[in-house]
Each structure stands twice: as structure tokens, then as C-alpha cells.
Amino acid sequence: MSVLPSRARLLELAKTSCRIFSTTFNPTGARTGNKILRQRLRGPSIVDYYPKRMVGIADLRRIWPDRVFIDEAEVMRLEDVQVAKIRGKGAPKKQRTKKENTRKRK
Image (cartoon, rainbow, N blue to C red; front, side):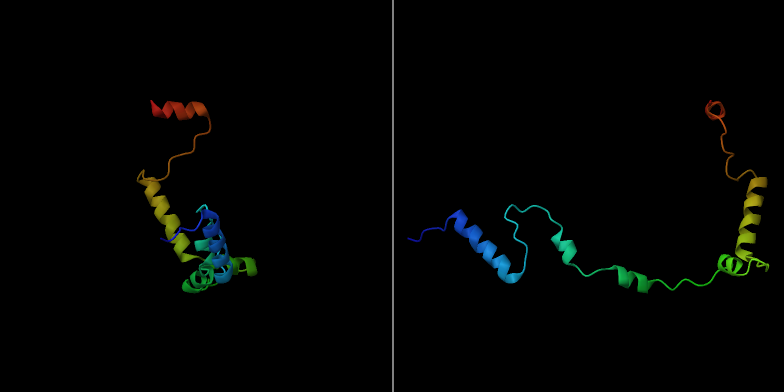
């Protein structure tokens, strides 16, 4: 009959195995996050996925404040907001006091 090794002997074997294979010795099985930390970093590939930021109207205004630059998309957006306000679909007015806030609920 064969005799089973003791718990201390098995722990010593696991510790030696971890030292040989460069892994973390974790006898209690606690969650340490080593799986995540061993993974390849995602940041550089995500940065490469998105296109580089182009120079925009705000950048041009910052560089040359004396020149006039018209952002057509912003002008169109402001016109749309104005039309929505006229139709009553705009953003609600901000409450200045707590009384105004309670009056609107009733």
C-alpha cells in the first residue's frame, strides 16, 4: 500500500513548483488579480485603433485669435436648438430657488 504525502509536504512541493515555473504561490486560493496583471497591455492597441485627432476650429481660434473662423456644424446645431425652443421642445429652465422646484411638481 502506498502512503499519501502530508499536507505540509504537498505545500512544499507546490512552493517549489511555483519557484521553478515563475508563478505565484497562493495556497489559500485568494483572488490576487495575477491573471489580469500577466495579460498584455491593451492601451497601445486601443490608441492605435482610433484615428489621430485632427486640428479643429477651436484649435485654429486658439492659434490665431485675431482671425474669424466659422464652425458650420456648431452654427447648424445652434439653429436647431433655437428652432426646438420655439416649438417648446428645448431644455427646461433652471430652477433658481427650492420653492420654484416644489411649485412645478404639484
